[in-house]
Length: 116
Image (cartoon, rainbow, N blue to C red; front, side, top):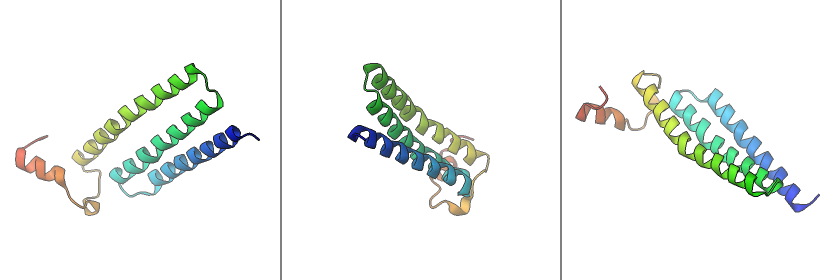
């Protein structure tokens, strides 16, 4: 077994662990906001590690540029998607207010009348 095969195996295992952690967090966490956190952070890191493993396994320009594009678009869209889902959950009362440490959005909505 060569060093690159060992690195690929480790990266795939790390990616599998991160994806599993995201799935467990989505099932186990109590409300939408914490589930969003569990679903976005490990998922992006898991995708990055598996794309790195793919790039190591087949180091051609086409594969590497495709992996970079996939990761770039994921990094650009995932935070915005989580933000919009969180705002939607907040506005439709699908969250547990007792778990919020500081409700900045409610203060901003009350003060400025934003989003009413």
